[in-house]
Each structure stands twice: as structure tokens, then as C-alpha cells.
Image 1 (cartoon, rainbow, N blue to C red):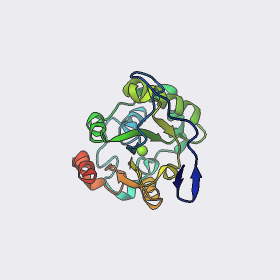
Image 2: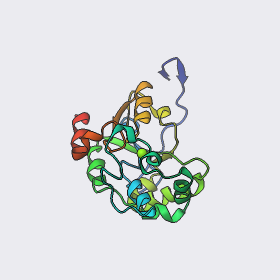
Image 3: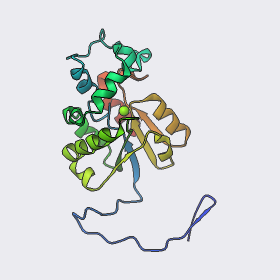
Length: 209
Ligand SMILES: [Mg+2]
């Protein structure tokens, strides 16, 4: 019998034994968990979207480097319906490239069980979720096969003593931290760590020590 806070938890069955390559293999429950955001952290959602809008390069002029330009709609003066139309196109997700630092970032998290934690978009979630799953299958096949991904806007529900969130949205990190988890705000020009974008991984590495 194991006591967790005030709740009684009974272990009814032994964990199933698994062999290598088994797609249903259990993840190590003793390892800490790193919840890793996709868009803006490992997947270059912004560049793919800007290309659809006819913008080929982000500069400080097209998108000022500042905490005040958190919203893409606001920074680029684009209506949210236009953006929603693009992200509801399942083909769009295939155009999204992994950031060049994706592999190195995953290696930094070797001591964690990595779970992708990404938000579906309201109204247009059907194509978005299918598109993101296809993206994971293509670029992170091991995570896809082991089904180490989760779709939820309210990321703070995953916060706890043994969990870490890496995300590019200030609010997600703040709520996760308030809920008792650790959070690293991944530096991007649209968040309050914008001044650290010249060494994103150096910043993450420092906080993981
Ligand atoms: Mg994000």
C-alpha cells in the first residue's frame, strides 16, 4: 500500500513486463518528466505561418523584439481568422520545420522522460491535432510510437514535484510554476526572455544544472 498525500493508492497489478521494441513498453515511472512544448520550442510554427502570409523573413521591423509584442496578430497586424484558416489546413503542419536545435535540446533532457505537451487550437482543432500527430510521427518517430504526447491547453495540470515544463509562453510557465512544477521559459522574441535568444540552449542548460 502506498500513501500519496491524503489519498490511499492500492497497487492491484504488477506492472507488465516488456521487451525492447514493444510499442506499449512502460516508461520509467521513477524518472522525472519533462513536458516539452512543440510550437516555438521544437517546431518552427512561426516561420511556416509567416511564409503562408507572404513574409519570408522575420526582422526586428516586421516583428519587434520586445515583450510588448506577445501576440502574433498584434505584431503582424493580421486578423486571427486569417491565421485560423491557415492552421486549419492539414497541409500546413507538414510545412513546419523542426528548429535546428531540436536534437540538442532533446539530448539535454536525457535524464528525463520527455512528453510532448502541446495545445490544440480552438474551433479548428481537428486538422490541427491530426497535423501535429503527423509531424511527430515524421520528426520524432520514437516519441510517436511510444505515444509520449499529449494535447491540452491547460498545461499546469501536469505540474508537480517531479515535473518540468519547457514552453515559450509566459503564462504557461507561470501557471505551471504556481502549481508546484519547474518551468523554463524557452527564449523567443515573443516572450519575456526575448533578450536571451542569442543563446537559447545555453540558458536551458544553465537552468538544468
Ligand atoms: Mg509554444
